Amino acid sequence: MKLTRVYLLAVLVLGSLPFYTASAQVRKIIQLSGVVLGEDSVSGLPGVHVYVPKAGRGTTTNNTGFFSMPVLVGDSVVISAVGYVRRHHIVADSREEYVTVIIEMATDNTFLKEVTILPFPTEEVFKQAVLALNVPLNENGIDKRNLNAELMALMMRTTPMDGNLNYRYYMDQYNASIDDRAVVRTNPFLNPFNWARFFRDLKQNKKK
Image 1 (cartoon, rainbow, N blue to C red):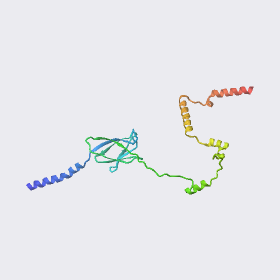
Image 2 (image 1 turned 30 degrees about the horizontal axis):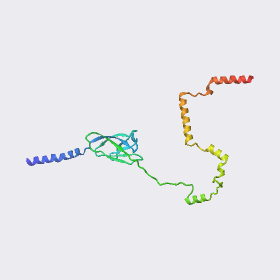
Image 3 (image 1 turned 90 degrees about the horizontal axis):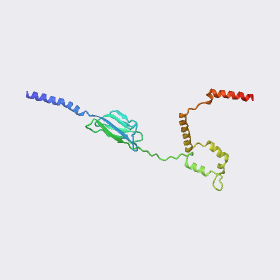
């Protein structure tokens, strides 16, 4: 009887080990919330991807850089955005069910080599073309052809507006739009009284 009791006790203990092991492997769920900031950002970075690659779940930050998603203790959360260095955050165990973090992203700067674009296949051909130029200059080093009145008038008509003229044109259009809000512009050709006065004046001119 004693051997039977010991055998039954061992079976019960060994049979319960997988249950306790499975219970110990269950990880706690935490609601992870936070704000993703840039180096010069105050309100946060929108559209940043916050996800757990192994679990295949994630979210993106809103217009103010805020995000919130459920995670498990021990998850490796990846924070990535175009133009920024990818960040990793390990979810630590916490007594609270809600955890708030602030993540600062660093700009990923990529410097490219300087590229010089020339309308010549090689630099040697460009130098030969410059040396072959024969521009007639006066004693002051100025080409008289550039002071031609017709050429300068053509340049004035065809030269596009610079930054100052573009700004003035934009301000004129903006002021006109403000005036249109307060005053409704009418088409005089659609006014029947104008047409009546036109025909009356036309008849009077014919009688004269």
